[in-house]
Image (tube, rainbow, N blue to C red; front, side):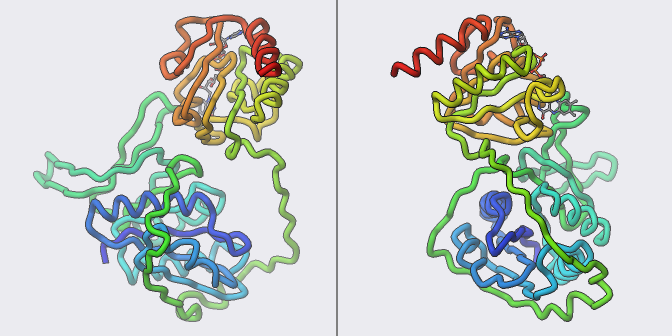
Amino acid sequence: MNNIFVYCEIEDGQVAEVSLELLTKGRSLANELKCKLEAIAIGHKLDGVEKQVMPYGVDTLYLADDKRLYPYQTLPHTSIVVKLFEEQKPQIAFMGASSIGRDLGPRVSSALHSGLTADCTSLLIGDHYDKKADKKYENLLYQIRPAFGGNIIATIINPDCRPQMATVREGVMKKEILDPKYKGKVVNLDVSKYVSDSDFVVEIIERHMEKSKLNIKGAPIIVAGGYGVGSKENFRLLNELAEVLGGEVGASRAAVDAGYVEHERQIGQTGLTVRPKLYIACGISGQIQHRAGMEQSAQIIAINTDPEAPINSIADYVITGDIADIIPKMIKYYKKN
Ligand code: FAD
């Protein structure tokens, strides 16, 4: 009752990174609210899930294990989560803003007549005073996300909705083990009580998984190019610098839209969220939508002809100049050292 729930996505027996990040966030909010952290995993052959999630401080793990529940299917997964939430009445529930979370979250919140804030970038606990009703609400979930094209940061609350639901994209929250020996309770659900045969309207005949060879999220160094790079050809300089440094190439949306580089490399609000040790922003102005995906990098170097470029305000080092002059010098220097 009144606990925090995290829906854990499972792929080949592995709990998704975004779910582990949400468990970390859920644990810290549960400590603040002095409530329990609970998790649900739905799929097949879930034996290894307990070991993966407990170190994040899960008090109760609900498992719905059935051959028909893997891979993900909209109706049966929705039915299980809705029924479990009706029983357990969580005050807060989180899901990844992945293709699964984006499908499942709105269905669950609509079935429960609740609300959902998508793509949150921060989650906090706070109070609210409703002047009209002269009513004070305590310990609400502040769901914080960019709005109006990223021009404002909105704090959204749903005082009378339960659960207060939010989705968060991978990489936005930090993942941190609480205690490797943390021991919560495991509850194996009787799946037949949560789904009916009529929920299985889809027959999956074959699955083809395309795995990207890029590892931008895991790269310790990212050399990111923006519209200021000027052309697809000029991006070769960035590729060379990334290679010399053992990093990956990222990009702003303007560079992607201009066709300089493929979409999988886009960083920002509608692209990837990254936290490398070093982020080199080349010819990127630093609009809020781009910063949303990279400002948690440990060190930022900005290379820009404009000394007033907004990216400079969050950079640790600013190089004012043309990338055509600066990058070849950097390549030469790092090749030598
Ligand atoms: P510009 O803003 O055009 O900046 C180019 C920079 O290059 C300038 O600062 C200029 O001084 C510099 N420059 C020019 N020539 C040189 C040179 N030779 N050497 C060095 N510097 C040079 N953007 C993203 O990046 N990621 C997103 O996920 C994203 N999502 C969005 C979502 C929404 C809903 C909206 C409305 C926008 C989104 N955007 C996103 C777009 C964002 O608002 C900006 O338009 C975009 O980030 C600008 O990219 P840029 O900095 O490369 O280009």
